[in-house]
Image (cartoon, rainbow, N blue to C red; front, side, top):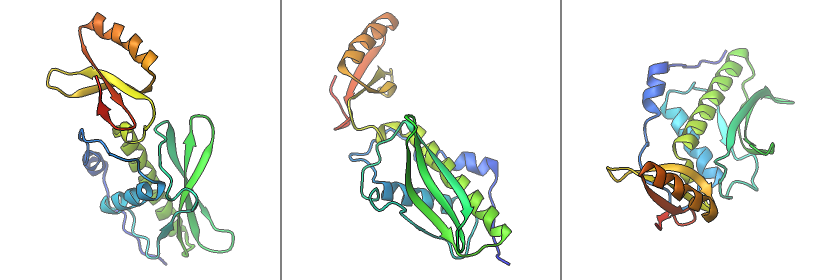
Length: 195
């Protein structure tokens, strides 16, 4: 029988998710491998269930070094018993256009019910952490077109659109004029405010 530790509370969860909420932007996209490794480390630091022989690897080696640029996708996971041995959790992106991109797998050779529940809980934590991270850092995943929004009185930027065209921005300028707000325009490829 496997031994697991499952020690987390809802209040700890909420508190820990505010970890990197700041205004700094990445200067280059995550690769799928980097992003998955970050999620695994965050899950472990947040008291994820301890699964003795847990191993994880990029399931799709074609994606491992490719840029992760899907802010309009949701991370999902499926935990199941393997065909011949162990328990596997597949992580994938479900894109808004319906595509599924498998990008990682976690596995254990243990096969008991308790381990299955622990793997499922672990997968839920990784999925939750990943989706929260994307929502809190959308601009880290958008590398085409332009972002635009309002410049607040304290100098901070409030994004109105993460991925739009210059034509969209021209229409947005009318909204700013009506609301008496100061606009900004950011080029997503360089993350530089250009207006």
